[in-house]
Image (cartoon, rainbow, N blue to C red; front, side, top):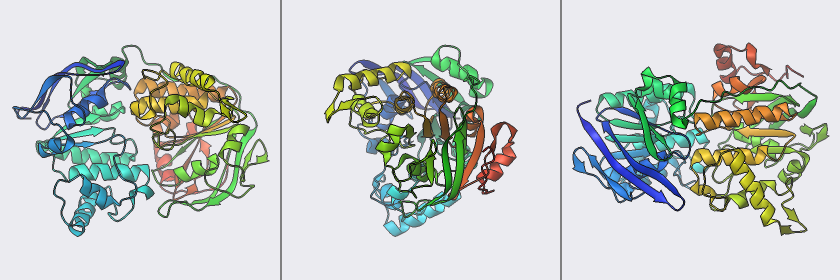
Length: 505
């Protein structure tokens, strides 16, 4: 480090009902990897949007390399050498990878030259991308690769990364970290936002902690425990999820030799999937992004047609049933993609609560919607799951990613499902919120529900799962007791050690 790259002085930004940032000040040095920490709704996203020119501060100033810096739009930030990897993908699904990347460049080269460059850079960083693939056909992990490569092609002086590893494998994370360390050694500063505190400890030189929009502390991550950082973020001791110790009951959900083609041309078809989940049990399913997770959830939710007898709920074949009929019977799901799939971005939280809760919560009668009851349901979700929002009338897209995730998971948990299937339940949420969501899933199982958790967070799966299996290329490994598994065994299962036996039935 040879001096200050970015100096932030008293940045303040208020919205109706909330002060997102309250006189925030700190410096980032050249070549420094600086962590920005805080619980969901602490103001991290608003702050980096001001740095990137997406939001204009109400008060305060910034200096970049000693000169006044006040970007009026992202193109001005990029011209000054500031690039950003977003938590929520800013991609056009109908366009291909190269076209999306070209849209983020002021003077893009020819598409042929750009495609060549994308292949070179993505292979160099171990995140291979086909520039001709349509983004709408990519998995979440592959879309994140597009965001990362798009920024690296800009040769930035300051790289802002908002939850960049949420959908990457541990191997991809290590490759990314090698890249970031190299960029740092060459003088590029990195402002890094992540709720994975061990990542922060491994990567970052310094950290600034926000709480309710204010700077409440600073630390050196490598000299601070993850628990201490988490408690600085929330201002209290951190709850550790506890299992209530309920009994395992009869099989509630059984899948027998399920094979379905992916609806997407570039998706992963499911091949001979068999599993069973019992009342009171949490089944964890790991795997690298794009190995059939979305297809499995779609088959269970009723969004993807299956053979009539392939899926049974309480012994009843439901393969021919659609999503509404399955919800009525008690099979509920929460997909990975928050905005657009789990929640309608421009609808209010009341409307989003009604979308999936109308049947089980009695929010409609004879074709008429019960808005008062829907509002009460949304308010109950907000209160129980500590969703930070001015009110239930706010649009889903106005929430931070973690707060929307809390709302989506809470909406399903509070409908008292017999079987709940969740994909990436704590993606992008802070340590305290993740612990709260995991506790809610454990409590649901303790109350007699069967829970399937699909996740790329192996620590999460080992913490809450009774049994564990891994998806690879649309196949499911043998399902084994989670407590007996070593990291090497999990790696083998994720790498394709296939099996169709259901070991605990």
